[in-house]
Structure formats: structure tokens, C-alpha cells
Image 1 (tube, protein in one colour):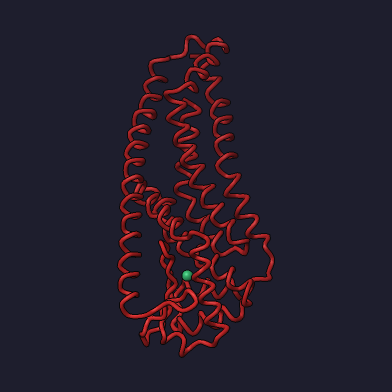
Image 2 (cartoon, protein in one colour):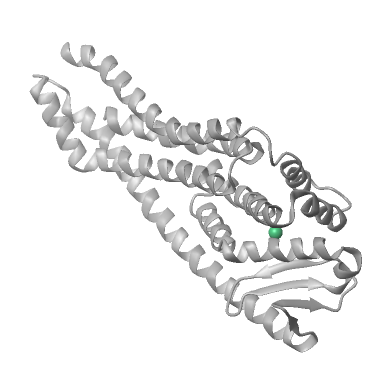
Length: 299
Ligand SMILES: [Zn+2]
């Protein structure tokens, strides 16, 4: 019971407080892949803690706890009450896990099909209006556009309007940014985040995942383009493409401006994401056992 309750509380705290930590991870300077590591760590620990609570309520963990209680000569423990609470956690948790797994699988299939349709439609339409030069499809549009779509073949699309407005080095940086999305399989990470959000829409960490991943993949692609062309060139291209700055663009420019700064806050945010769930579950279990044992001894 103590283990189940501690794991449920841990999963709930990570699920509710995770978005605040992810916001820090987005602002902090750190190697781009570590942002995804922090996200996976938080998401993974929430899922492991939740699954662990169900397992502890129903599985071998419960048997271990029962034997431990017997070993401590707490045979007078009111087993009916304890088992009842364990069963509530176990049954509701198992139902939630099955429902979430089903929703995740459905959303993944739907998103994969959507990605295939999107690619095929763009490939067919691009083939009708323009041709690829050096792996880039140049759309005859005055609008400033740049995007990429993963598939066979991967598509990197820029508009001719963009070519008129940006210098050669800036255009090369934009192309590299888009290719970095494709190399990094960013569309899969975005799809995973949307599937997680569809599976657990009432959990803030899951609900915020698409927004976090969308921002993190842009920072990652900017960093890759910046390494090759210099952050100043990427910033200049970004400035020309988005003269009206959104919060997302402002964050990207901020990172490009301080790409040589101190990475300590990033390391701290990552360490918190890694250690928070484990230390919290351990503390709750120890504290719960410590509090409950005297009461049980006199039961
Ligand atoms: Zn991008």
C-alpha cells in the first residue's frame, strides 16, 4: 500500500510539475539532444511510477510487502482495509493504462497515415509546379516559405520569394535547418508527442508535450545550422523570415545569440528531470513506512 501510494503521488507530481521543468529546459542552454532526453526522462519516470503503482498493488510487489509485514510480526494488520485500498489503486490504474495504451496506438496509426498522405499530396503537387534543384524544391511563390516533409523521398521546399529576400549564406543555412529536421527524424518526435498527448490528455506533462517538442526541434535544427554557417547567419535568416516576432521566434533568436554562454542552468534542469522522480518516490516510500509502522505495530 505504501509503495503503491508513493508511486501514485510521484507519477502525479511529475505529471503536474513536469511542464514547469520543461519550460526551464527550453530556456536553458544545453546540447540540443539533451532537451529530448529530459522530456523522455520525465515522461518515462511518470509512466514507470504509474505502472509500478499498479504492479505493486497487484503483482509480486504486493506479495513482498505482505511477507515483509508478516516478518515484522504485524499479522494483526487489518488486511481487509489494506487489500481494499490496493485493489482500488490496482483496478483504476490498470483500466487507465489499458485505455491510454489504446488511445496511444490509435493516435500513432492516425498520425502515421496523416504523415504519409501529407507527403504524397505535397510530392504530387510539387512535381506538377516545379522541379528539385540540388535536393531542394523551389516553389514559384512570392511568400517566404521553407519547410520539410519526411518520406520517400524526403522533401525540402523553399519558395522563390525567400530566395529573393535572403542572401546565399542565409539560404544555405535555411536549407541546412530543414535537412537537420529530416536527419534528426524530428517528425517522429513530434508524432510521438502528439500520440502521448492523445493518450493522456488530462495530464499536464502529456498535454504540453507537443508544444515542447515543436519548440525543441526548432532549437535543435537552428543549432545544427548554426554549427555549419554560424549563429549570426541563422539569426539573420530567421529575422528576415519572421519580421513580426512570435514568442517561439524570440526564443530561437535568444538561443542563437547566446550559443557560447554558460551551460550550467541546462545541466541543473537535466539533473532535476533525472533525479526528481527517483528521489521523490524513495523519500515517500521511506517516509510512509516510517509513519505507518508505529501505527501498524499498535493495530
Ligand atoms: Zn524548422
